[in-house]
Image: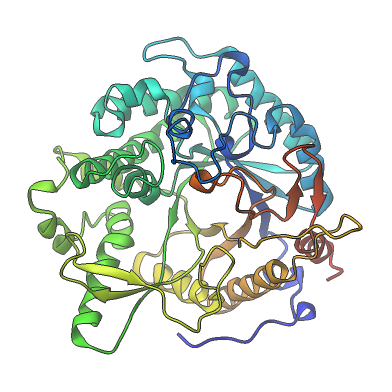
Length: 455
């Protein structure tokens, strides 16, 4: 891929994307809600993980986060003021069920019912993510996602939530980034529950995908006219060199990083090469599992942040590949490469190879170390430029015939950024975590002007 120049701020128009394009922001429950023990919520694996020494860089936790549990009307007003027509959020499973076999928690369901009503009253179409990594701790204690009963528990949870909200919510995402659930949570230990086991990670991955597939018909039965999908973290994969070994490493890495999910979801089963390389660590796959995973969906959510550059490495795991960070590339303050052309290429590749009916960019954003000016303003020009350039990349994909129907910026608010705690900021609105004051950054002001036809 060749680098594209920055898109001038005035070269984009909302009208370029069509009148029915979906414009939103994304958030997740654990990262913003707080209210950790309010109204019967029980601990999640992230509450437990935050208590482990050294697990969170700044030693913080999500018990308060952005206090969205109490301040949600203000946050929905912010979304309306931006000119959004959609809002993607996740539901906290530990707010809905307090134990395996327990009755649903009505207070938790009522919270999300009020939240949905608040969105609709402000002209925001709710997009619900049913799982954004906050597994109830009581299920982890019983084996977590390695236990096939967790799949059944998830389907029951989905049934309850969609019955309660399905009269008003029509857009459903089963899981956010199964890769992170499986690999960061159970192989490299960066995320909750903090395990480091390849067979565990692979079994978790399979069961998460299975729970997705088994939930799709449940959502359709409960919600007439539902649009159902899944959100995947996907990356263009490039070779560190022109060597044959590195070129082959790209194929192996792509087979697990991207195709493991896409192939299975679109009815091709798991790619053969990584499955063979897993050997005895491969997941247990019961008869009918792969057919269930391939349940037809209405859209694919694509979460894009950066490409990955890989090299052949005989000492690096079962894939024998490692990710490298080439010098001279533009990067965010988190170290992630800024490559909007990668988004165009990724969307085109998915459309060509899998032909999903619709696609949405369900996450895209950037982390920079924001500085609050003396006047209280936050001039995050790099984040604004990132947003402009990636929207130009989406427009290019649409111009090329890719069925991209919407874009959700990550994120509406600065929040609890998982193992980074509150050290990293992705929001287009700045959050002072002492006072909980929200301040729209320059990037958010640009997004508002763009959506209002004034950028």
